[in-house]
Amino acid sequence: MTISLQHWIDGKLTDGQSERTSPVFNPATGEHTANVPLASAAEVNAAVETARIASLEWRNASLSRRAAVLFSFRELLHNRMNDLAAIVTAEHGKVLSDALGEIARGLENVEFATGVPNLVKGGYSEQVSTGVDVYSIRQPLGVVAGITPFNFPVMVPLWMCANAIATGNSFVLKPSEKDPSASLFLAQLWHEAGLPDGVFTVIHGDKEAVDTLLTHPDVSAVSFVGSTPIARYIYETGTANGKRVQALGGAKNHMLVLPDADVDLAADAAVSAAYGAAGERCMAISVTVAVGDIGDRLVEAIAARLPKLIIGNGADPDTDMGPLITAAHRDKVAGYIAAGQESGATVVVDGRTGDLPAEGFFLGTTLLDHVDTNMSVYTDEIFGPVLSVVRADTYEDALGIINSNSFANGTAIFTRDGGAARKFQNEVEVGMVGINVPIPVPVAYYSFGGWKSSLFGDNHMYGPEGINFYTRGKVVTSRWPDPATSTVDLGFPRTR
Ligand code: NAD
Image 1 (cartoon, protein in one colour):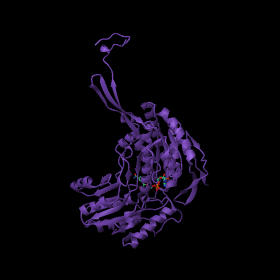
Image 2 (cartoon, helix red, strand yellow; image 1 turned 180 degrees about the horizontal axis):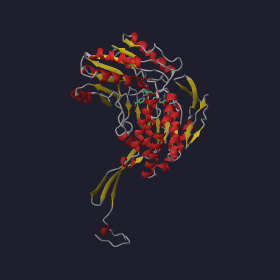
Image 3 (cartoon, protein in one colour; image 1 turned 90 degrees about the vertical axis):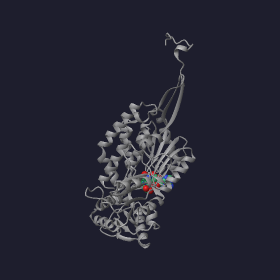
Image 4 (cartoon, protein in one colour; image 1 turned 60 degrees about the horizontal axis):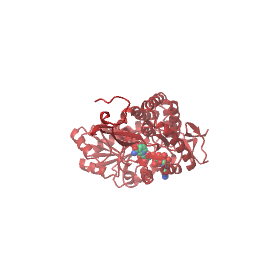
């Protein structure tokens, strides 16, 4: 049965009016499970208006009241994790344990935001001049919007909305149209947690909805996570319309393996980081740069692990890797493998062959060796279960390869040499660095963000920079004359 999804506006499910919809699939079965409404500009305007009205009251809610709502939301989310994970797996395809992992990483952001009374503290300087004090406060922006990708339908919205709401804003979410149901589940939990109607909105849509948010005079800030071309467009359009924008883009993450590395540790890390969630992670390892003589041993160790991975429906607890998000994306990824092969890469393991489920959008794991940096399999973000191995003679050569890449989201080094690791963390031009950690997603009390074409804007996402992004500073300079010298009748005796 194909169900019709709804928007979440002003604290309730609301039918779409535009008559435009987009299909939602279960990628493990290929079944068309739902249609999601695509909002018209008029519907987005109406949703933003409810958010604007709600923000006028929410901005004045006490810090303790806001924290209490966050604590309730945290408990509800924690208690309903399994239900939410099942929704994620049914529309995204990732295995249940991975869906639970993304919810856990999102929960961290909610827990961070419960500390809002501490996070928005300002500074105070007494007696900067006689009778004059100066202090700073941080205030909410009003209505802020989030536009999110398909690959983390829970975690990425939570990166944004936990801090945005804690700091007193109304948050309008435009989730991916490919797996939209998780956002409606989050909306229901916010409602149950006692969040006033209109403070959290879900408006589904495509370019029309996004463009309306980007140009709406009542939307003060836009947070975006998605591919680089769209991130650039969001940044340019949003800032041209006077908005604060943070737009996180695509990635091509390299794992540098030095000759002294523990080969088994590095191979295990490469397998989980390259093929977890079928490679559809912005922090997935896409390229392994093998330095010196470790290349052959590393490729052999990775190849030996791949036949053991069970590929199938993510709802089955025995499955290690699920399908890709759509049939079209699966075919695009397969096309990159063919292009790599044609341009001279060695196909060590070929994901296009082998025993894959007949239904659904499956592709097996692929390992390409001797990949050259001018091949499309290297230059482009593939976003699938394909790992390329590039050989480098020296550490300097490997560093040069990483620093020449236009993407700079995450990277990792595998070595037993602390000095080499320290040199790498200093010299590599990438926003997030792992040392013997393949996917260095920062904990919620740091901030997440890449460099170069992986991020447009000044603030990284969540953590302290998230609080900064969703608030604006105000500095007050006050003068109060000494009551003993005042000539005004105070109605009480003047004493020193
Ligand atoms: P996408 O760019 O296609 O879509 C992201 C969002 O933008 C969706 O909500 C979509 O509806 C909207 N959108 C798409 N086309 C648009 C257009 N022309 N105009 C306006 N809005 C548009 O990305 P995706 O395929 O959903 O997600 C995968 C991408 O996201 C990958 O490139 C991945 O690297 C990236 N990503 C990056 C990070 C990060 O932290 N840097 C995290 C997760 C995903």
